[in-house]
Image (cartoon, rainbow, N blue to C red):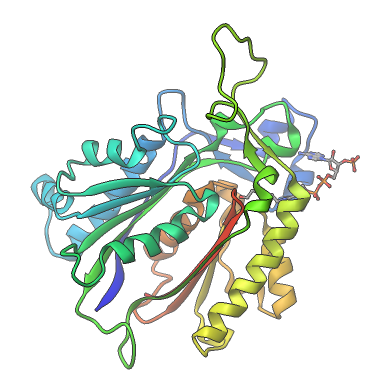
Length: 345
Ligand code: UT7
């Protein structure tokens, strides 16, 4: 039995904001942003768009890919494909609603996935990595479930302080999705396929380093309270940077050693797109050539839980992933969390 990704999709808002656009409103420059992060532009959701809307677009694209591969077409086939889903797992830090209902339930309804259980997971930018492993568990032997939809979707533009130049330049909005299926292929031995291994971790002592302080039960808004800025994420950039380089390096090493392989066996590393310098620093420590890492941060900036599935979809749709390729995902985020998956495509 293997847990395989059989379709991918993404939902990207059309409005594109370049570094130069930002430099017209803030004390920053294209040169600073590019040289410190690798970011050139980001996409921003309009006011009417919520997390579930981007997630829905990504999910529909992923389902359409599966339908096409199965030789189907048309709306009826899409409806059937949605009904074939047994579970929806959605990673986000910016849900449609605070706590209840889950954004996964909103997507389940809009998609018409009436047979699917649905849940959100809060693992920050590691949401998709966690989500794949959670989906694999939910599809496990004896579960009676066969197909899962795993989504990472975030609208961080709505939760940053747009006057804070150290923060607002980093993020963009988007969603990415993967359809994951339990197949008859082997997951070990010759001809093995799918999700091989996942490492998940957390260091809760770093909660303060990436935090949205207001609005939850610790610090609720009070009746009549006047606020200067809407709820927004605060970050200790240097602490997150150091955590990220350390954990990304360690996780790559662990995935390789636990699977008894070398980096040469890996076709592509798909890292969380937070800062190109983090990826370069980890690559340098491990002697991994830069070309092994796929980066599209220049176009989308940091889309949080969406960044890895967006990147996977881009690679998939440009024909850059071939059956049998070994793909590694690596990520980190609020919590602080981290992790990585090894997948035979
Ligand atoms: O998904 C996980 C989320 N977060 C991350 O992955 C973030 C991890 N951290 C980082 O990527 C980096 O720490 C940042 C990109 C956030 C910051 O880069 P840095 O090289 O650590 O810059 P810094 O904060 O040390 O700031 C250096 C200088 C400061 O000026 P002074 O004090 O040296 O005069 C800042 O005020 O750069 C200034 N600065 C800017 N200048 C122009 C900070 N932001 C900007 C800006 N434009 N946007």
